Length: 97
Image (cartoon, rainbow, N blue to C red; front, side, top):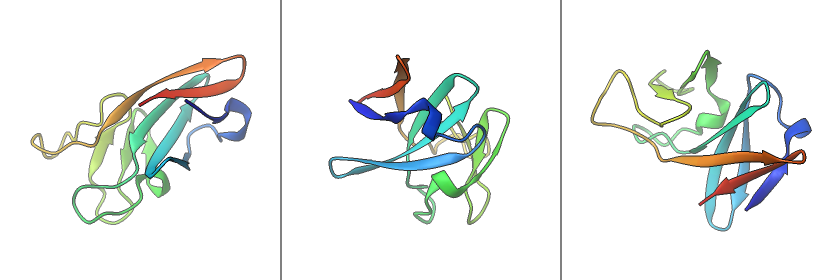
C-alpha cells in the first residue's frame, strides 16, 4: 500500500503514517525506508518521535532500542515491534502489510 513520497520523509527522522486503523513509523536512511509499528510495547510511546542513531530508533520515553530493519529490541531480547517490508517505486513509498 502506498503510504507517501520518499521526498516527504526527512533523512534520519521518523514520520507517522496511518494505514487503516494502524499507525506506522517510517524512517528514512538515504534511499532506504523502514516501517515499524509506531507503538513501543513498554509504555505505548510513539516510536516515530524517537531518536534515530545508525540502524536503531530509541523510544522517546525510556530509550528502549529497536532495530529499524527487524523491530528487535537489543536491550530486551523478548521484546520487539512489528517491522514491515518497504520498497520505493518511482518515488512512492510502498509498505506491505
